[in-house]
Length: 65
Image 1 (cartoon, one colour):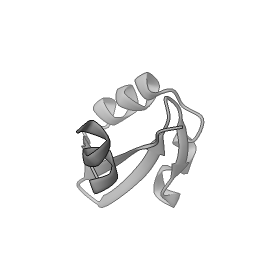
Image 2 (tube, one colour):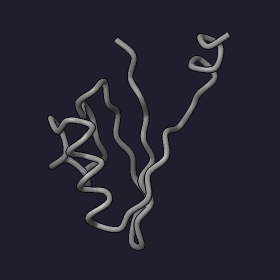
Image 3 (cartoon, one colour):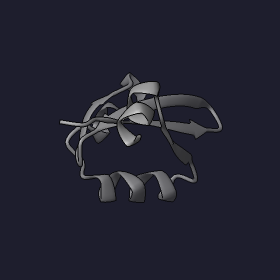
Image 4 (cartoon, rainbow, N blue to C red):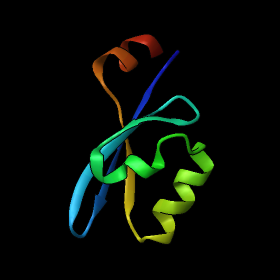
């Protein structure tokens, strides 16, 4: 299973969640997103005017090459 770390930036917080197609783990402020599909999470992020970025770590970079 490959988990993707997503960083969310909002006016009053910066937090993240991990997803494997569904949100499997999240910061406390985002806990209601656990279990959401990626599409539903993207819709929530957009509706709230937040920005989101996938955080690429060294392991993900090594796997690509």
